[in-house]
Length: 297
Image (cartoon, rainbow, N blue to C red; front, top):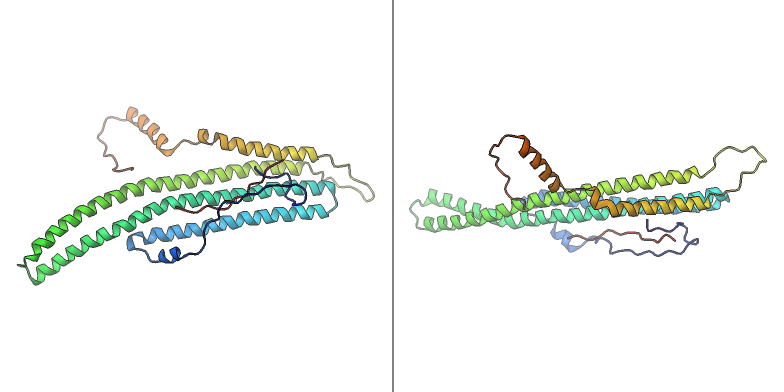
């Protein structure tokens, strides 16, 4: 988990490194507010995704705050069992906050892939505009001066513009398909990672709660001495090992969509009669989120 065994600042020394935070407001964001018509919708989508990323970053910070407040509250109860379990549960909650932060980082990377499509759309827009402008000029000239010698020149320019636009449109189609798959494949993998790691942490969190004896006592009786400290530390070690194992097995657990498609095509080709199929044409940066990295000792 890359966390300490306690979230209390005075109980255990820990190291924390924070990568570069995502950038905030800048003049670049002002320039981005004026977009060509072709890339306007994708620009809004990317901007909305940025708001989502900020929300998950905020959720991660709130998780960490809640973890520390739980730990501090448990310490002041003067109940050894409550103090230890609340502190260890705080470690689990804090790690859940780290997962929110990691998820935000992965969303930001997927968002960066979408920017490639947006930038390509922006580059294609002038080509479309140039072609349409020449075509409109030809139509107007035919109405006003049908015999004008300039018509020949404009028609030649239109042929060149259409050829340039054809190349640009093909490039846009190829990049759009490739990067759309790449961006949302990365996002769905991030969703899976976040969900499965949350499940791991939640299960170990419940193991911690099982160590807390909540059987009622009668007035004047004293509870049994708390002896779950070692078991609680082992739960955190188990959680760390499970998270590490998840990372190591990640590549084996997930096959890429392209590999899945190849397997499906093999099955279909052997089962279906041979029929001509029209193949699809063409298959063909962003700042980081903050992370918490504290070493378990």
